[in-house]
Image 1 (cartoon, rainbow, N blue to C red):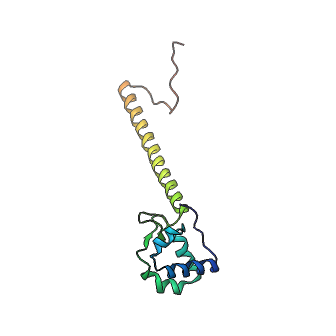
Image 2 (image 1 turned 90 degrees about the vertical axis):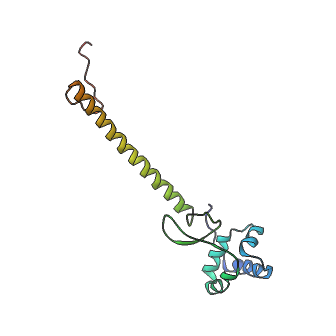
Amino acid sequence: MAKRQIRDKKTTRKMWDELLESRQMLRHWCYAGKVPASDLIYSMLKHFPAEWEQWKDRLGKLHEGTCEFCTRHFYGNVKAQRFCDDVCARNNWISRQEDFHGNKRARDTEYRERKREKKQAETGQAAVESGHEPEDPAR
């Protein structure tokens, strides 16, 4: 996902008029013109919100969604888009990594503690600090 590009009012008006003259669906026109549909939609919402509301139902199916990270409503470029922009996608990935590795470290630490306690109970040795093994008296 690239950074969303909000176009200026003049460019947005020109693109919008071309779309309406072509009588194509929004997605088809944007694909042919190599313009991300979400860029045109957000430009319209910024500069001409009343006109957007009037025409949005006549422009074909739009991919609307709710961002899984920030829960904002957005118009995506594809149906499977889960996040409103690349910032939310990245933040979600980071939080998932932190959750997984944080929990994994906690599980690993608990496992090592239980294993060490079990070994000490079997051998009857005194408790040893983590990472410090008793010295071998034969040395």
